[in-house]
Length: 83
Image (cartoon, rainbow, N blue to C red):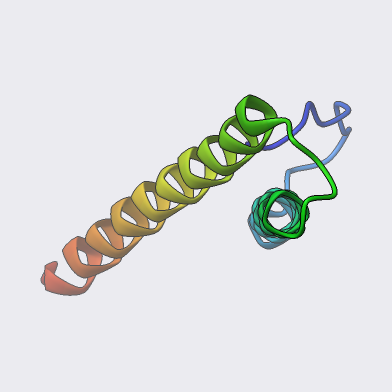
């Protein structure tokens, strides 16, 4: 998932961190699709590398989906609070 971020003096911007994570997941997905296409067209015969790339992209996506689900649950819980 997210790569190691350098320590900042100020507070972290959640939007920027989440956008970086989305970009990394998208890059993993694109890499997996490219490798599958290369295998299908005969440009490579590295089946294990292709499978590893696809699994890595799937795992990153599933992790991101769980983060999204947790954020939605937290938002809904906040909205149910009485003021």
